[in-house]
Amino acid sequence: MALQTLNPHRHAAAVSPAPSSVPRRGHPPPHPLLHLPPRRRLAGGAARPRAVAAAVSGAVNEARRRGAPQGGGGEDGRKDTDLATLGNLCVDVVLSVPQLPPAPREERKAYMERLAASPPDQKFWEAGGNCNLAFAAARLGLSCSTLGHVGEEIYGKFLLDVLQAEGISVVGMLENTNAAACRQAYETLLCWVLVDPFQKHGFCSVAFFAMPAVTSVKSPLSVGYDSYSSLKILFCNGYAFDEFFPDVIASSIDCAIDSGTAVFFYPGPRGKSLLHGTLDEQRALEHALRLSDVLLLTSDEAEALTNIRNPVQAGQELLKRGIRTKQVVIKMGSKGSIMVTKNTISCAPAFKIDVVDTVGCGDSFTAAIAFGFLHDLPAVNTLTLANAVGAATATGCGAGRNVARLDTVLQLLREADLNEKDTLWTELIEGNSLCIEVSILSGMARNGFSERIVHVPVTKVVSDLLPMLEAVLERNAVQA
Figure 1: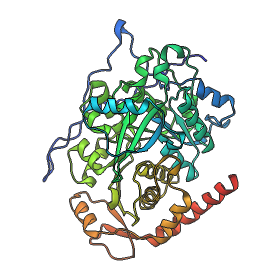
Figure 2: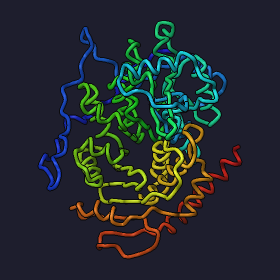
Figure 3: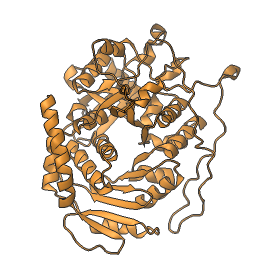
Figure 4: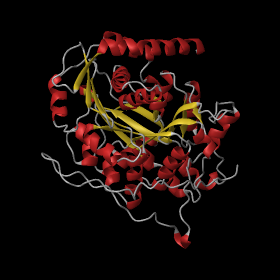
């Protein structure tokens, strides 16, 4: 297939006015927005292609030949794919170990190489990375696709089979015209998920020790506008920087925006290192933070990017910095979650559960945020569903195909057992000086502590959500 190099209109993320740097009372000033020099050019004066890249081997194209569903806009131009993920397709190899791998980089790398020397039994394999998000979203009834690279070896074929069985399509892939020369770059990414006797997790992956996979490919393969025009949401996280050039990620966002596709960005643990990384990484991080429609972060990650400890205020700061940002969603772990928009602050306490395994909870949470975004749900309803989906994953063991199932989500919603701590939300909101509406999910109807605060009964939220989700469950059963 022919190579396409996209040169979309570049959105001026780095030329908009910087926000005020006046520090707020009680905490250090936020990190200023980056104002970086122009994108560097390759030797000989040629700019690096603004390719929306996905390195891909024949395995993906074989899936297409076998009839795996492919993305693309409908004949009438409608968007028929709800959610697509960019990169971070991997196979998790989950192993129990007597102790977690050593911390020093070289020792950890040697540890991983010893593990990789003898591939474990397939019963220890599971689809990982962005597959977790795609699976959870599909179980909520969303049409999902993945954009990434896999190899032709046994791991790649396993991953494609699992994705196809879950109804997840692999789209926008082009033939690699020089696969033999780039074989190493196209091997399926493995992530070793190691669990010690205390159920603590350690992770090892070649992505932790190598340059992005696309660096060994002189002309990154491209995905055309037609692929993006069919999407409603493009999801990208910080781990994409382990696979693709920063320019590739920024261009992916540009193509999505130009196609009318919403962008979700989760910087994740990589956010802090990208903030202090190369100029290309800093530029691409700024681009993603300012041009995404929805930002998702943990409270620690929000603090790292803004230098503001209060998650509500950190969310407001990110919203203020954004050009297109509509929602900033802050995950608070077992405490719950927060959504900050231009005119509202919404808080939802978590559900009480017996936690078995937290791997994949964040991905599952994000799937429900996408569901709420696409269905234009009230913020509190979206957070309630996201908390339930994340909690449902935590009650099981492992991620991949073990992420939340809809019947478990429905059970948690019907029980509506919230981990309520009014003092937490009061403390977080008290620092908010803006006169905007605050909504808090509550186990019962009651008066707020100020005129601006509305307590939303969980019974009302659940009564709104159940008909939608029960319809999805019934539809899934019919399709099965």
